[in-house]
Length: 467
Length: 104
Image (cartoon, rainbow over all chains, first blue to last red; front, side):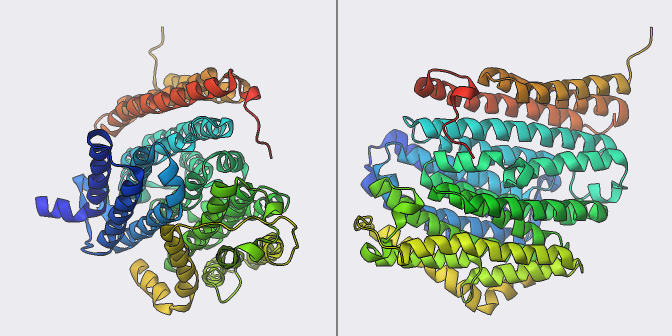
């Protein structure tokens, strides 16, 4: 019994141990950041390795907690993401006064995401969702003396509190309509009555808030711009990814009987999200704000794959998020290194970056090519699989809109690449000195962007998990 | 005198929910907005308890859920108030109209 508990909750327990260790280090010792940051990086690497081994299938606590190979792989993706964040922002972390707290908050949020991915009932799901959002709001306020940072945190906590209120109202209606909150029991009791549809709409609204799907995206750009870059990258990659994973479970397993109803909803929201995300990304001047709107557009593409309701859809979404983590983190890593050392965040400041900083220019170019979906980067394959999954429904109008949006998105991604490589600038950004850890993080991201697409067994492996 | 039934309680909780939503969108003071969110959460508690008592008396999930919602609401309010205090230190105001350096 105890063995089963230890093995099934392995990823969560490893994270808990790291959190407690950091707490003890913070309270009991006076280690400097110089020594502590490498230690945390090693611990997070251990966490990545641990997430790949000894994965078993099973349920615990009377169905509250379930795990299987696919969920374990989703947790591994998130673990890779936080390891990369600890590498890419090593410079910022070393200079931060409250470094251990940053990791304690971030790992608590990731713990919530792990529980959320594994949740087997709406109660567990709700608690885990709160655990994964409340620490992030505190993280957004990490630059305590900066005005923008506290404004971002205020917008984040109010919108997430409001959206969890809506989520809870939906859950209470589901409980009233079916009498259960277990994921396993709900599908048999769904018959598409108006009360259940209303409950689903409330529930989906809350998801849309967290995933910043368009009518509910207004907090995204402000929070991204105001928060420190490390927090922004965490928000845009790790929290988006975890919500997309749990959305897969909810739509494909729990609300499978109401498929006709949610297909139209997802399709409509996906079209609006792609168009609005693209249009607003066109006119942004701040690189963080630009990446915020580009991530909204990417969420629109995730919804294209999500709408297919097939194992192929699950595989394509998980694969896309794996690629998205590498490409978006590379872009944020470059933006973070530049804003940390020069304070420059405007796209115009990036003009002529290639003259002084060839390495990070290439990393940025690779990341943006992957986000735009240009072969041979992995982003192309990710988008291709998402669109083929979406096309399996035979709704070619929808797929055409998605493909057209892909072309529009090329404009603004290539605009930055043009600024970096072609535009002349009398005063380009001076030479950025990268720490070895940051360089390693960028190299891992670059390797991930190229290899995830070229090695076909990655996609085959994910497909084999979803069957 | 009519006994209050499920419908009465649901009407009250729906009213509370929408009063909360209305307050959240119209009030400009951060603490009042937080109070509006609490109204929404309390309407949910009322819903859970009412469904538990009148519709599913032998399934206690609703009661447990209400207890957890109360605890989470407290945690959320604690973090929100900490953030609002920090905002007050930098902006000298807790009016949302004064915290709008970032737009569009």
